[in-house]
Image (tube, rainbow, N blue to C red):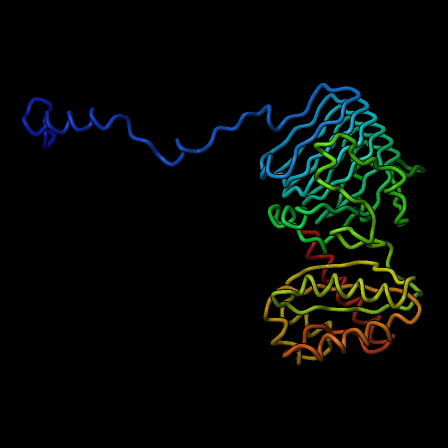
Length: 353
């Protein structure tokens, strides 16, 4: 069988002329903006202060390599990032959807927020971290971990751009892939002032303009004590049910609680979607079925003397001002212990996936 319009036919010549006049066809992938790798790479610097301002990375992959005695600040959300062969550097890594992977680095201070975190062949590192899953170290020694504590005006939007929850932070739950018998390759610090002693703010006018701030009072991420669990202390489980402002309600609750009990601490925070069966096991009743069905919940494990009474009072005030129940607070210490154990055994399994 032949073609309907042959090249020599009148119709065929007309079709060929139209094609030539139109020029080559363009497709959606042809219109995609070309990426210059140099824009997303910082390498071979020494005794410098460099970085990227908000809006300059926009979820691209990034590379830092072969840097010494420098300060590096990435004030944007990122896809994945590798940091190789760096020493004596201060590095700020904005919210990263996938992995932050440090290799062959030493004597660095790093602040990072990410989906996954891993080190290999690193030594004497201070890491201030938000990590959605369990951080992993491999062939690394003298690793010190603390909780991410930072803010700048665009940081909340960068967390959203990276798809990270500020309430899911496994910073202290470290897995050592290559443990050495009789030695400890890592440690954790729950001291809130550790970051300010170790991390250096930018000094150049361009990077100072981002207005990076450190500390628990202003941090976008709630400061948590991390592991181990609360054993022996007065503890209360507070759960915020989904609505348009439940994240802000949780942050406001923490601020209000600190104003009432200055010594209070948040051991863990979690943002997860609960199944009805899990909710019934945690609450020990089915009456919360409808509010659980609305969407994800945020849970806070609060510690401190008088914490139960203070949390209950704030919770009652929040519920009184709402049309539907927005927060749940455990009723007494016996109930708290049971519900805390039930919730965090479920939440830990969810976040480890």
